[in-house]
Image (cartoon, rainbow, N blue to C red; front, side):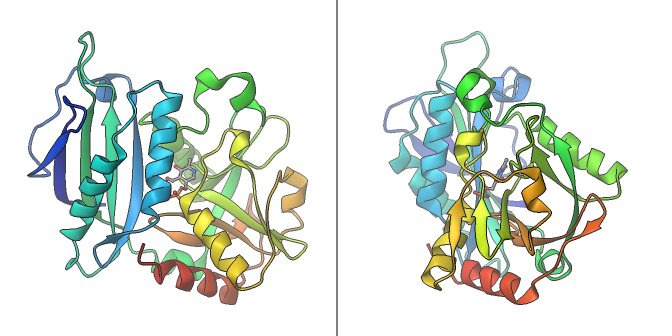
Length: 290
Ligand code: PLP
């Protein structure tokens, strides 16, 4: 990820505003709760030709995360404008870019406005991952599948700035000879990746677990299902047991910056790679312009 364009927001008034700053400028105080507690939320939208993809779905999820954290309701008109502006300024970057937009609770110990910014960046090239596939391991997330219902204060399913765990699991994957992770619940359900949604093809149906299981509603997964359905292919949002995944003849980890990354091994066991399906899905994703 290479930072390119920064817009910094002033959220001290209900309407708010934003202004262009330099990505390497010092703008955040060291007592900002986003830094000291990871107390805030974020979104990362993919950008093609200066157009942010799945923008409305990202904004909706941003508002959902804010609500789960009892943060002030974001002015979505302002956030829409700042993301569009940031993306637009990268129209000539010529590669897959992205916009990461963040809102923290503001300054610790003060009744302060939230802090917000939108950072435009050049994304890692997903070509090799999409072609060759990824090796993943299943790791226990330590919660039951119904954690969002039983313990909403754990914020499972909110896209918070507390992503240290989402990064530590990648180091554990590396120790086990893999590069990515599928989280499982303590009671035997498949959940999601640390920065991706899981889509599996089981008995001819493309299936993904429901957000009610304490996972993020994936914007990429949503667009994939829309495209598959348009092509007459069967999709279902449903619980996936760990044992069900053994029957899958295709598994993908899907996210805004990578698209659909096919899984080639899970815990060292080969998973069939359907290159045609992967190309079709990513072709549809790359053809989006909204
Ligand atoms: N699940 C988690 C935990 C994520 O962090 C992400 C994205 O970063 C996703 C799923 C996929 O979401 P999207 O397709 O909107 O990028």
